[in-house]
Amino acid sequence: MKESARLLIRLGSLGDVVLATAAANAARSLWGDGCLDVLVKSEWAPIWEGHPAVRRVHAWRREERGLPGLRRWALRLRAEGYVETFDLQASSRTRLLAALAGLRRVRRPVRHGLARRLLVWTHRWGPPADYSVAASFARTVGVDAVALPSLHPAEAARARAATLGVPPGAAGLVPGAKHATKRWPLERFVETGRALAAAGLGPVAVFLGPEEENLLRDWKTLWPEDGNWVILREDLATVGAVLETLGVVVANDTGLAHLASAAGVRVVVLLGCTVRAFGFVPAGDGHQVLEVADLSCRPCSLHGSAECPRSHFRCMADIDTGPVVSAALSAAAASARASLPM
Image 1 (tube, helix red, strand yellow):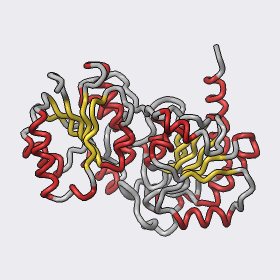
Image 2 (tube, one colour):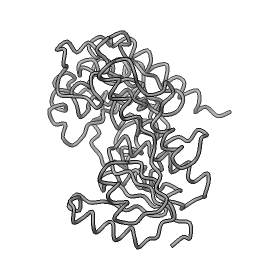
Image 3 (cartoon, rainbow, N blue to C red):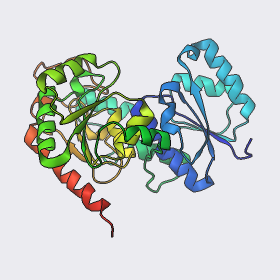
């Protein structure tokens, strides 16, 4: 074991794990390659594959997530003798794990949890104006300078991505989200996709999750197959490899928006029930946030919900297709200029 081995804990979810790579990049700037081991839920382990800061990934499988599994993980981690731990999850489970494992020098990020809840409840108080989750994770490691998330797809994933029919510089669309109040109406994603394909950014890549069968059915109903879109439901490593080839991604406020930004793609993100102040907008330059800023009911929840509590859903319904298409075309043009040889 490395004398200076450190442990980073971020179990989930997808967006948070992607943002945690900013902390790994910060750690690498201090201690070099292979300075970290990472504990993460097994479904998100591919995010860490190939990251130069990571020596080893501890993948916490679903069947291990009860109390007996937690005890076994505590014994494993205790045996590693880590000199420092960055608990970016900072949950009751990871706090108990750290205590049982006897982890030393445990550092946790400032998450402004109460401030974010106050913003939902009162629409007045909230986190500091410059709050960023990615920056908070980097500061936990001890780096105040900018450290951004990153992906490092393996060549096998890139080879697989190249066979899927998505040309370099194409547009990507992320029409899904776990919670309904984070989803821009599907027909507007279709309108946006048609406009981007007509502008030469097709076939557009449409990213759907394994549990989004209904969304896939509705997509095919609204836009019958005409060669201008490609549905992508690949493994996470392949998705990351596809994303890094795109010119722009239009996405709801979901984990794939962060995956796209970590892959180096400009993202147009649509905010509905959530707001920038929560600190989860894509990290880095060149991204655009579209939202209905003058609604007194925003934000209405921290993570989204099954339906609009006011029954009007104006936070998403009032975002028109035109500005989204314009923002995406502008971002794609900037990406194309940036890729030109100097």
